[in-house]
Length: 455
View 1 (cartoon, rainbow, N blue to C red):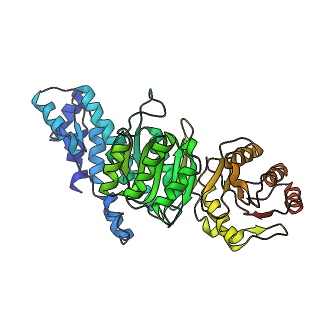
View 2 (view 1 turned 180 degrees about the horizontal axis):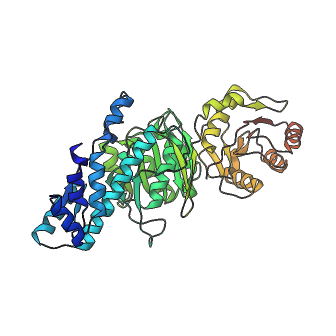
View 3 (view 1 turned 30 degrees about the horizontal axis):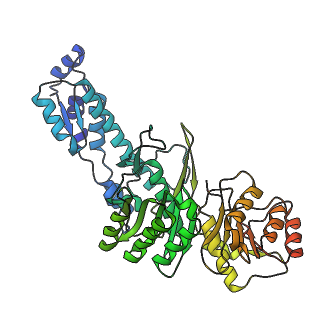
């Protein structure tokens, strides 16, 4: 209670430029406090312990500290609010120069209010039970200044939730280029793909969407398949791998460069051996080499935010994909084999992390993409792109759509290319036309009864 006493708060808050304030301060024997240096109770650290009780967490909600900081920040023209030990030297320099730097004081005040906002937002989220409260502040702490934004003339920085468990938090540069905004978002898109699998999984990402995804019995096999899925598009891409990259796996990138005359911009993997790191440095000096450690199966709190310029949309994340398999429905006379079903389920995981509208072709036996048609405004156009890209690999392959087919045109086109299985959401008014076409053409069709849009 001492820190929220009348004497302390008045000593911080009274305006030295007003004679009435000065007079009242003398009458009440209020001593001026010109600097407030305050570290808040460690609420953020406390709630990281999964065993902490509500009572213990509430005990770590600081009251006196924020009160003093807020008063000092409001009266920054006369009082220095200091909440960051990194500013101690600057504050001392300000004293030694005997200056009252107005911009420096304003900077400290803004920093103090940002600090309080971050602190309070974590408390509110911890105590709150609503997904979508009437008012919300999204907490973030600057993790990295980026090389540039979406384009070189734009500036950017990466912010992470203080409670984040996402691997971006542990991103470590070993060699090569610093990251731009697109590099970071591409790496994140890669995380979202490979974290869906316990097996070695690899993807090549460009513009936040995979151009190849594969799993394998080893990281080397997974990476080979992910590149082979679309070697043309892999040029200048970002590789994300959910397992340790050893020398044999790293040499896949060297072979790709030698045989295809193609480069990879960024490699981001769970771990790298020393031999693999040394080798990659010889493949391309500017290639960014990063590690991110273990990918958790579940994040601390998973929401998606879509920014709207001066606002945002918040939604729950598209999770629990495997649980949705129980709702799948075979709607044709022909039924899938056990191997086909396994491939279909793998493909549904793949497409759930590919930009919509999307249609993909997956190999009938190998868990890898053969063709990806994504980011289109027409379902038939996505189908055409996927089939064309798959080329000779469409025979007996599996075609997957992230939503329903509004017409039977995609079904008939798929059959011409030799597709044997179609997976789609179902739910169109023209479902019966698609089912009828599939039966006529001897195809297997399964409805997932769940959409997999990803924008």
